[in-house]
Length: 74
Image (cartoon, rainbow, N blue to C red):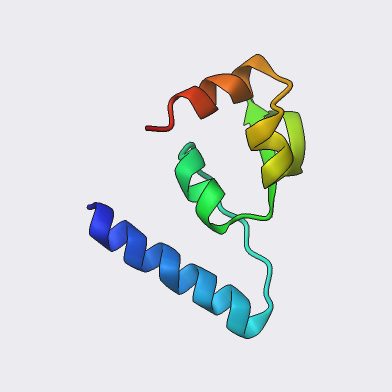
């Protein structure tokens, strides 16, 4: 459910701000990445194919797999 997801993402961001902790999320949902991440590592078939800041990956993806993930974001 989108409402529950938004609440959970809000809690994650709040915890990050309050505690100053790092967090690793594993997801194909680039919308979630855009919402909570600072840095991104893109993997394809267990291999790192691209990494960088959220801005770099979202605005200047260099790998076809990354571009495919981004094109799947509604």
